[in-house]
Amino acid sequence: MHKIHLISGPRNISTAMMYSFGNRPDFSIIDEPFYASYLHNNKIDHPGKKAILTSQSVVAEDVIESLNIQNTATSYFFIKNMAHHIHTLDLNFILPFKNIFLIRDPARILWSFNKVIKEIHLDDIGIKQEYDIYTFLKEHNQKTVIINSDELLMNPPQYLKRICEDLSIDYDERMEKWEAGPRIEDGVWANHWYKNVHKSTGFIKQKSDFKGLPNHLKKIYEEALPYYEILNKHTIKLN
Image 1 (cartoon, rainbow, N blue to C red):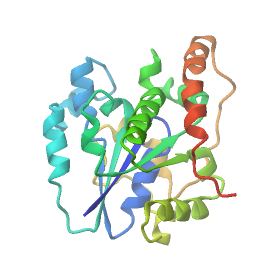
Image 2 (spheres, rainbow, N blue to C red):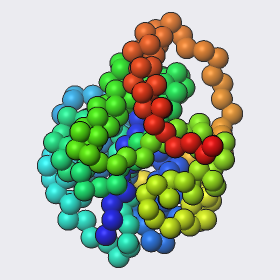
Image 3 (cartoon, helix red, strand yellow):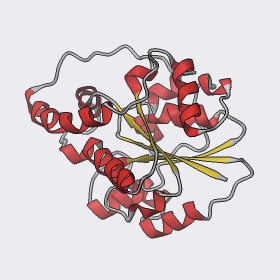
Image 4 (cartoon, rainbow, N blue to C red):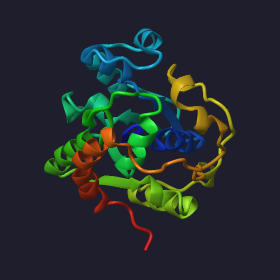
C-alpha cells in the first residue's frame, strides 16, 4: 500500500483535497491524526478541544506507529496533516511517504483563520513549518510535490491530472466531484472548520470578503511571506 501525505496549513483547501482523493475507490483517507497530540502538547485552545482530545491519542509516537502499520483493502492511503501538528516530531516517519505540500497566500489564510481564532501567531498558520519540513525532505533527497491552491482552483481537472502525474499514479476523474455533506472520516472538529467544504461538490473558488489585513495581522504576514515565496517558486505549473 502506498501512502500519499498532504502537508498543509489551516484555511486552505486541504479538506477538499482529502475528499477528492477519498472519492477514488482505490484510496482510503485519514483526517489530521496528530491534532489531539498537537493541542495536548502545546497547551493550545481550539474550538471543540475536549472532544478532539478524547477522539485521538495524544501520544504522537502511538499515532506514528498506527500510521506505519495501517493496512487497508485499498491500494493507496491518503493522510492529511497540518504542518504545525507534526513539525516538532521525528520527521523520519514521513520519509517513506509521497509528500505533497499545499500552500496559499498567507494574507488569505490569516484573514480566514482570524474568523475562528482571534489571537494568531506565525506558528499557527503552518507556512514556516511547511518550509522547514520541505527543507528536511530535500536534505534527504526526497521528491516533493508543491501545490498552490489558488492555481489549482483556476483549472481543477488539469491541475489534478498534473498532481497525479507527479505522484506517478493514474488519474481518476472522480477526483473532480464528490457528494455534498460530511464524510465518515471527518475529524470531530469538522463542525467548527468544514462548513464550506460540506456545502461543496468539487473545487470551486469561494466568494471572498477579503478587504485587506487589519493592522494586527500585517506583521505576521510580513514574517510569513518569505517562506511562502520560496515554496511558491517550486509549485506545479500548468504552463
